[in-house]
Image 1 (cartoon, rainbow, N blue to C red):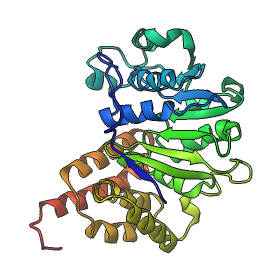
Image 2 (cartoon, helix red, strand yellow):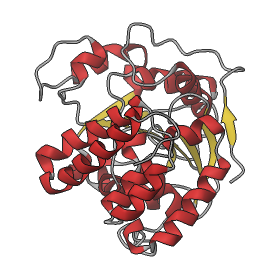
Image 3 (cartoon, rainbow, N blue to C red):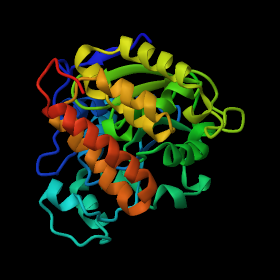
Image 4 (cartoon, rainbow, N blue to C red):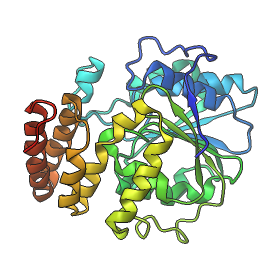
Length: 316
């Protein structure tokens, strides 16, 4: 793949003091470093800025680019159940946090246009005509990423545009790894040494009609091909990154109905209590929206929890 590991050693930490963040310090530096490359060939868009820590980081880099710039920030700006614990801010589920975001990005407010919207409700005309830098931290599934892709793909500039995706290696958003593995025209250029962020170069014209994400979904591939692609991808990753995401392949196989293969792969995967906690979060979320799918996860969880309790070197 030919990508580099970004350690942030040569980049100063952006100033987002007092703003709750769900990105690591090294990821904040990567936002800054990526934004610093801005040339003015297109616009800058951030999808999913939350409370503005990432926004302040990339605005710092845009200032350092030496170019005149403006930024479009798209988010529902609606509070969800997990945000209070992560931020220490007491809002009710569904409340708007747009005013908090605007306060947090006050030094750059005059250059920022906000678009309060869920991805499913966005329209193409809400995006600039051309996009040079696209920062994404909102889609968590193939479906929502495909919706966003349909809106922005034709606006990205081959050979010029850069896409930073904060959840690329996020364990419970494992479908997104496959999105970027299977959609042509995107080349991984950097991985953050800490966290889940990946940066991609746009190498070819992206066309949702020619390369329909639904037609490229991994459900259309035989299990042997999925296993081959996964091993090739893992082989490119540093050991820690490999260990962080390897277990997510079990979740993909389970989702696609390859349950026997999922269990076989699970038996040779090294699991941690953290992995099981992440899988349980998926199970709990699905229990509300997709109970049938959640039951499959429940069975898998029971087996993995039992395996974790067994002494090393033993088997069922």
